Length: 395
Image (tube, rainbow, N blue to C red; front, side):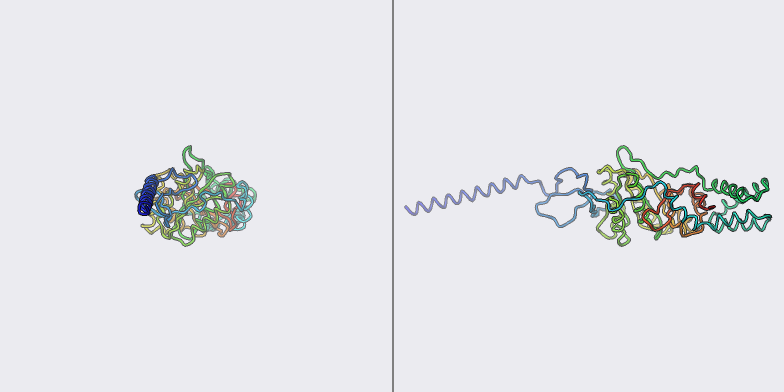
């Protein structure tokens, strides 16, 4: 009897084991296949995630175009709302507020010309001094000769040395050279189906990352939604510096956590995030590069081409250091040939008396100076206004 009882217990145990095993395989068979997408991309997360059977220690991979290798990109702001810690100053009136700095730094040009033109007798020696003053102010040879010829003719006709008359005459001629007719609009309008994309380029040390941070503040003050792309992957801490600027005004940054990662892929992913999140503007920071380094300049062209697989590059801003003078013209020419520069940001204008560089650059490239940097403060980036600039020179 006990043997029969024991046999029944064994049979029940075997049946139980078989049942548990069948249930396990049934449940396992319902899981998603390894490596398949679990759903559409989250608009707040620029990187798609994959489902695996076991937790992965690898960060998510991003989608990238075929001519740019996959990299790991981190958007530290994905899924959360950034709380601004700073409120940017209004854009309107910045140049007027900063005019005293511009006047102080550039008065050598204006006052020197006014003093020379107000003399009782203007002979060839005086005209030579006027020409030298303009050249030293980085006006450039061709604009200098144009201005001197125009002033000669007007002085000959007017025959007046009245200070106000000389001032007005000089203002009119300088304003013609600075060219107020150029389109200096820098506040972009979002496309119907994608953001406006801005690339910022320039050589090492001109302040590109800082300029982008300040420009982000300008856009936030204009109530624009912005995403920053940290495509300067070679300079240590460049991405963190950019993210810090963005955090202060509640602007997210897409960046790589791999040193030396492919900048084109970072730029592509930043634009993708901008499209997903329906922002107004995506700004792409790029590594500084010397204009005579062919490989680096080719890479800059690649970044632009890769972005254009996803969206148009609507603006290429070239950041130039005003204190470099004529050397900046050589830089500007090469950059324009590679990426079709559409506007100039002239930094450190408060540190030079050579205000003529504005005219020289515009003549060289045929594109306008759109913004000028007049100090180290976070809101010391101002829209360029031709009339206000000339008035500051002659104040």
